Amino acid sequence: MQLLRPFRLAKLTQVVSLALLSCALAAPAAHAATPKKDAKKPVAAATKKAAKEPAGKGHAAVQPKGAKVAKGKPEKADTKLAARKGGKTVLAAKAEREEKTGGKKRLARAGAAAAAATAVAAAEPARLSYGQMAGLHSVSDPLDLQSSVAYVIDQDTHEVLLSKNDQAVLPIASLTKLMTGLLISQARLPMDEMITITQDDVDTEKHSSSRLRVGTTLTRAEMMHLALMSSENRAAHALGRTYPGGLAQFVQLMNSKAQQLGMKDTRYVEPTGLSSSNQSSARDLARLVAVAHADPLMREYSTSPGYEVAVGRRTLQFNNTNRLVKSDNWDIGLQKTGYISEAGRCLVMQAHVAGRKLIMVFLDSAGKFSRLADAERVRHWMESKGPTASNTVASRIRG
Image (cartoon, rainbow, N blue to C red):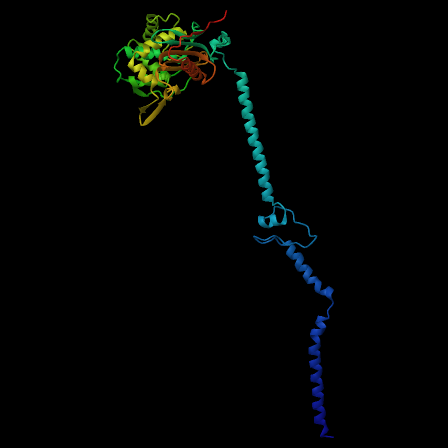
């Protein structure tokens, strides 16, 4: 009996050990057998917590199905991702709204400006020229000229080749400067004498602009060149103002010279032509062109295509107001253009056409380039007639 006790004690120990091992192996199985509804609770809580947290930079927020979007200003989203999703980002929508609003504002401003311009144009209708008010444009001619007054003669034979309202007395605008230049040239004054533009030379009648600022100093020759070629009003006024005896004496000499040349329909009140009181007829102007053409300075300065003058540290480029002087189709010996609203577009020229020396006068032309077009019509007409043409086209003032 005593021999069996140690054996039984060992056997009991072995049984207990096996029982403990069985319990240890059964624990994981029991944990795995826990109901699924208990396992879902931490997962759902984690998902809900993640839904409330904002997305990180460069990533869209992941939200569970059916979850509500939190209100408030969203962070900048990945525009490429938004485009793939087929929706517009808030920034894109805002930019689109601003573009539309800006476009509408620009259109509104442009419309307002156009309306204002229309209102001004309606409030200030175009002023009629003296020729238009007199009905001179209703007089027709075979060449369909746009000038209400036209006069073309042969300089050598004095034959009248074309005449339309040639006795009408009208404002002559800057054709006035032909007489201004002629008197300066014939006076034999020092052409290198310096003349300064002053406030007295500024146009207070038409308020025309000028590139010759007050204080600009040029020689008399330069002033005369700019007056004849580029129709510079301040230069022409300065020439008359600085004439011996002053401006009043110069204007008196202008009228005396006109009478001397037989220009009975001509009257001058100032040396630029800005005043509509400077008036003449086509016949008188043809006389003046013939005399001026005999003066070398008048020929040179009036037909110069362009001219540069140094004004302080600047060099100013001036161009001829008559583009025909640059044309290979023309051989022009003297020319002058003019314009004010009362006179319309004016042009006088001496030119070789079809083997003849012609003097042309065009007054009160209706369009900006129509006076040049009228000169071209006369040239083509004369070339079609030939050098022996003697047919005269005449139209007189009606009534």
